[in-house]
Length: 388
Ligand SMILES: *Cc1c(COP(=O)(O)O)cnc(C)c1O
Image (cartoon, rainbow, N blue to C red; front, top):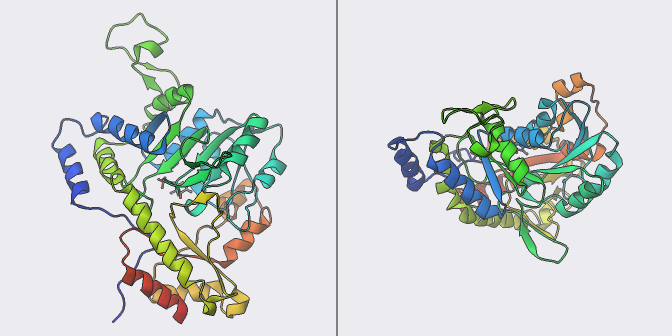
């Protein structure tokens, strides 16, 4: 009998989550009601930031971050090629130019030294990604950004609940270190609202801009109105915003999910530890590299990536990938370097820009990791990899 399919990632939904959504369906507000603010407050408290603005997707959150950072035509923004296309697409939405800086070969995160090499007079911002859930060199990048007067955006779609040690040696949760931190609540991420995202900041000016950005650029706030001569019906569109609002149904799901976040992360770390142990066994020596964890970071493990020494194994990555798929192990590859995509090639990017990321891409496979995975599932994945 074939083992049931094990996806690389999936949501964990329980009866409390379902009830939370049903309760909203029976209430007065399906959208822009009380759940929105409650969800924002809860996320802000969890990550330790002053302001949080929820939006329709993680991509909308990145778009908002770039908008609030005032990125416009001719501005360059430095980012990593080892990410989902949405990270650099958000720069393009504003007419900016993504500039790709290569990664650290151990952590797979953007390398601060490579960022520094790419800074020019046109550089406006840096977008780092906490790849796989391990925080990027946030304090080094923050320092770099301050020295060069750049805005630092952290795409934390992978890293809700992750921590990094500051210069005093204290652990800090990510979410208030960069100028703007964005999260995604897609079903494979740490918590889900089906689709959804959050933008976190400590800056009241950025916060104000983001709340308008989310809703057409429109405000009703008496304090923000430019023309104060109208009646109570009056509202103003002050710039070109979007309808990127999250619904109360989704916010209620998010609140309920957040109650379980610490247990989700605990389980993700447990599974990662089981994988670390299994793939450190002698039969995998010189064949498989487990994900390196810098001692000053605590990953929240969005995904688990194995790096294969293909020549020692004597198989191609495709063979390994296909065999694992045939065994119902949900494998994936994170990521195709962004600028390999035809659209980026069309924009004029060419292969060879970031050799370390490109080399890594050739050798990696993402294996299943999600909180609902049983130990039996984990053991099946390990056994399948051994067999292959
Ligand atoms: C998931 C993800 C996004 C986009 O989030 P959506 O909610 O799917 O729009 C952006 N960046 C990274 C690194 C992601 O993994």
